[in-house]
Length: 153
Image (cartoon, rainbow, N blue to C red; front, top):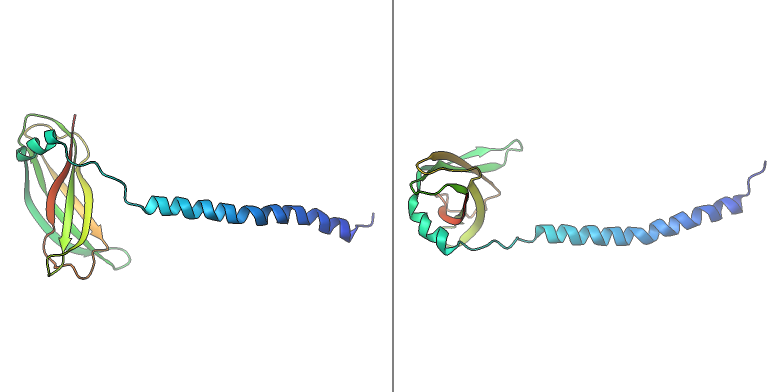
């Protein structure tokens, strides 16, 4: 059987047109989703109930150290302990860690969880917070640690 080059060419054109039409659509969807994922997510402010409970939480033995990750980049680690001196079990506690430059301007603000599993009344737990990509303009001092969220069990 003899193949017809014209017929083979026309059979190839339709899939190429479809693929050529879909590529910009797929690229646009990928770009949109990537852009949406990069947006900071709105975080609920601390509730009045949580603000009143903050006085029952104690951060202690807080220290900072710098290490290097596997690529050699600096990782700043903040370690410490949190104690629940109140009468309620906590499901989650988050901190705002605020890094400043030498002029007192904020160079990085990151909200991180320090309690992810129930913390009972009277219980103390260690925490470790690694930060990568802290700007070089950072003043090299311990970041300000502010309780930003408390969830009760």
